[in-house]
Structure formats: C-alpha cells, structure tokens
Length: 436
Image (tube, rainbow, N blue to C red; front, side, top):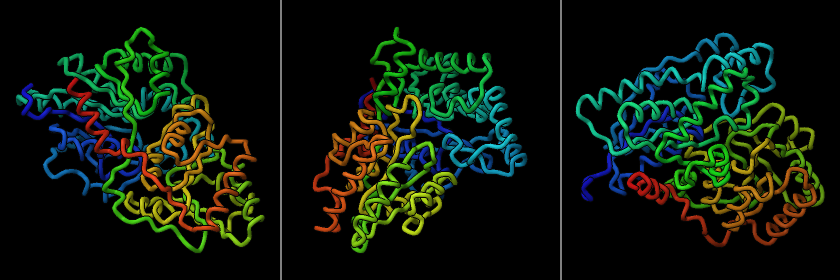
C-alpha cells in the first residue's frame, strides 16, 4: 500500500446513529477521527427502520463525518415478537431494563439462549454479508475489516469474510463473550453452550487482531487460548471526545451534587454507599447533599434509595441525548459510577469512566480494589475504588469531600492527566494497528 494512499477500512457494526446508548459510541468516535490518520472508513450497518435499538439518539447523526460512506441494510430479527409477547421494550444492559423476570421472560431468555446463538441479531448477518459481497463484486478493495461487538454475532461476519476472501480482520470485542456477567441468565443447554464457545474460539483464533477494552479482558481471552501469541490481543480502551467537552464546568454552589449517568441496577450494590451518604447528610445538615441519576435505573435500586432515606434528596432523570448527558456531568460536584458485583468484574471498564475523567471531577467508584477501573482512577488521580461493603472507607471519602466543599464548592480536579484516552488519540492507535 502506498504511503500516500488512504488505508481503506471496512467497519461492520450493528450499533450506529441514530442508535443511542453506550454501544454506539466506540465505532462512531473511531470513524469520526480516522480521517485525521489517512484512513478511509466505509461503514456497514443496519437500517434504523428495521433495527431493534434499545434507545435512539438522533443527535449523534451530526457526528458522522460528511464524507463517510454508510451502507444500511435490512435485517431479520425476532424482537417484534418479543415485544408483542411481553409488552416490554427490547432488553439491554444485561436485562437491566426488565426488572424481576416473570415466567414469560424466563422462558424467552431460555429460547434466546438456545435457539439464537450467539444472539438474536444474527439475522442481520446475511444482509450485511450480501452488502459486502456487492462491494467486492463491483471491484472495491479494502485493506482491513473491523467487526465490532456486541452483538457478538457480528464477529461471525468477519469470520466468514476471512474464510471467503482472506481479508485482514480486526475483531473489536467491547465486552467478553461467554464470560459476560449475565451469561448464566440465558440458561444455555449443553449443546448451545458448546456451540457458543466454539464460535468464540473460532473468532479469537482466526482474527488477525483482537481488540479489547481492558487489560483484564485480554488476560481472560489469553487464558482461554494460551497457545495464541499475546501480541494478537491489543488493549484499545474506550475514551472521551474532546469536542463533547467544550462547555465550561459549572458545579453547583448551593449543594454538593453527586451524579450518575447511564444504566444502574441492584447488581451494582451501591446500597452501602447510599447508607453512608445518608449518614454523612445527617452529620452535616449545613451541607446539602444531592443525588442525581440520569438514565435507566432499576425499580429495585430506586427502593434502595428510598430505604436509605434519600428519596427527597434524589433526582431521577430518564434517558437523554448524549450531549445533554455531558451537560449533566459538567453541572455536578462529584460523579458516581459502579462496577457490577459479578464474577470476573476486574476487567469491566465502562466507557463512561473516560467521560467522567474528561469532566475533571472527583469520582466515587463502587467496585473491587485492584480492578482495571481502580487502577485507571488512581493513575489519573481522580479517585479510587470503594469496595462494596467497605462502609468505613465510603464514609471517610464522603467526609473528605464535604470538608473540601465547605472550603470551596468547586471540587474540580486541579490537573488533567487523561489526554491519552481522547478518542482522537485512540483512533490514531487503531490506524497504526490496522496498518501493522
């Protein structure tokens, strides 16, 4: 390939604007910045009129660079039947929006786990493959293909293209596959579990490069296939887009406001933190402590807030477009995040942590000490993980924040140490990996 000719990258992703939520951010931001590194992306995605997006965010369409070609295809999926049978929206976030499952939902999870392998969006694959074949038949050439998942069925598109055409293939794994924390809730029978694990093994083996978002996920995949070279697995974390943070920080002066954005359920086990917040508020009635959740909050977690006596001090705001979510971050004193209390959670490094860092505010993180999230927060001097049951450390941390707030209601951090995680910098690293 000539040094002057752009690298032609085919990006295959189910989630693309106007899809909203966390899943769309990674590929969108890569594509937004790849042009700066002499990469010409072409995107294959699903027609939004036929897609089963959990949430939509029309504002993200404006972030797609004008010159980028986006090819949208049909799909064949069972989610309309799911909605008719249950009367509920498409499940997402590890069933975070479903609440306690009833008999019908448990039965449908069993069907999903045993008849739709790896997942129900596999019906999109043949449509996406047909679109790629049309491009190749017309004489188009690509230097590399990137498939991003979940849904992990998207990786089978890359696997098929590798078999048919030998294209250089980058498998971008935003989450673990058979080790994802809600995997047990799919109730796989032995054959279904074997087949799913076989697909995972084929993808990890056949891809030229496997991109993962955290060091722990790399260790997890390498442990499955120790015969593979460690260089095959590249850690390319999520990040933040500097252009999303052009507005100034405006922390409140009339209260100490703690904000959480995104999905959160009782699996995140913030009940001890809520109790510590209530205790801290009782000790310091002169410091108005306020809690704000922006996004999907499970009914059980709302009950935890009520049991802690914090309902009057808590604001619940439903899903908002991404740009408004950033505004809520910037109008906060402190930011709250939590890692779900599930097996193998040391490698969970949610995309929101990078946007929290970009907001340059102290971060309360409920999760395991020594995890990838804990290491990142300490590296950037933004906080540390507060173990789920360590009430003493939680109260001590809150007391310190209250003391600081009394001196100055602006708790913004004094230094910026997270620039290496900007989306533009990460797109540059992706361009280097695609060329290597």
